[in-house]
Image (cartoon, rainbow over all chains, first blue to last red; front, side, top):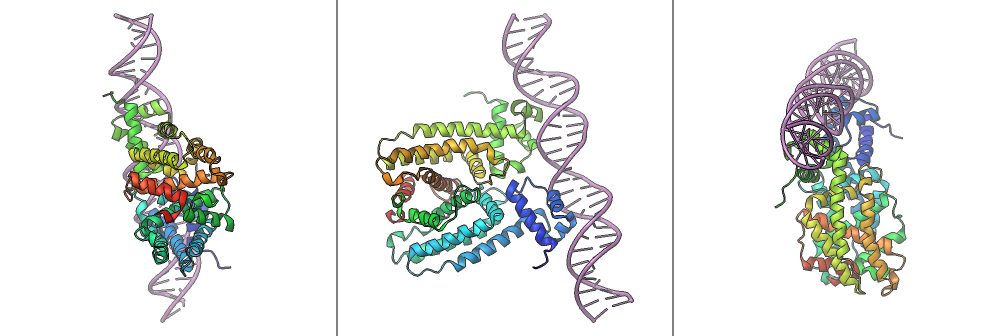
Length: 192
Length: 192
DNA sequence: ACATTTATATACCGATCGGTATATAAGTCA
DNA sequence: TGACTTATATACCGATCGGTATATAAATGT
């Protein structure tokens, strides 16, 4: 197993503490003490507290966007591709609870909040997967034309809500629950 | 016009600052200076920084739950009542951006977060309006039986997503957009 | 008019914040 | 082996944190 560097351990420690208690509520002193190093080490690797958060999100989104890229091939079956994307998204969140909590925390901030701008480019790339999905589906589903952005935003909203319920242990992550979620989104509440 | 007390002005100032930058990132010094009083005044009225946040949420939810109470009478028409509740919820959020931002920020926190427990009782009362709606609809819509909790959570998730888009200026609040949102939730994406 | 209660201010507290100056250790390269 | 680069630690910085001790002002009640 690869030897864990101080840099890696600092980032993972910060992810855990920031997720559990919020970025502003956790001090640099607590992060370095928990990681077992000192402040100059953190500042050497990340430059600042803000730089540490930037690195956390860069890593999180790089992986998440790669996973969604793998799951996004559309072949004419909207339900199937949507299930693939949704499964990939929820599975990733379940396996990366700390950074997913942070992602949600940032997603539900006012635009004016200093930290919200950190994830704006990532959030746009994330949204684009779902926009592309609906855009690709327009030939078979003409009524979706012109609604791609709104649909992408609303589906992401549904997924993010599911993520917080999942991470807080209020719903399970099963093939069946994904199926229900996707079908309800596509066909409404009467398919239950 | 009623004379504004220092207590009122402190609470409103804190709502604005906490919403814009986050509870932990705003200090008591900034709140009292912006409000034009001194710390002992704040501590006299609210007891602590935490007590100030408690008072903010108590006020916010008291009004919100009252508004939802007024909008919740079910008369057999699920679409109609859902539209009433959704309109009340979104209209209230639009008119109370600051405390609604705070509500969202608290809603998307891990259960372990110290501040998340502040709104747990309120969140349960809020959810209950939607649980009651779906419960009341079961006689006409038998397939909803047994799904009331999950439906309530998912509808609230859809609404909260809409709230953040609304507050961040990404979608308008119109009768038509509410109609689309509710119909899509009930009947799926093909009603668009 | 005085006592009591409510509400406010000044000055201060110990603790912690994000970050840096300086020094040293460890690893790499020629 | 020495020079250079990378990575770490100790000690410290000015600023701010949440909160309080003490005093005074304003409002209310008798």
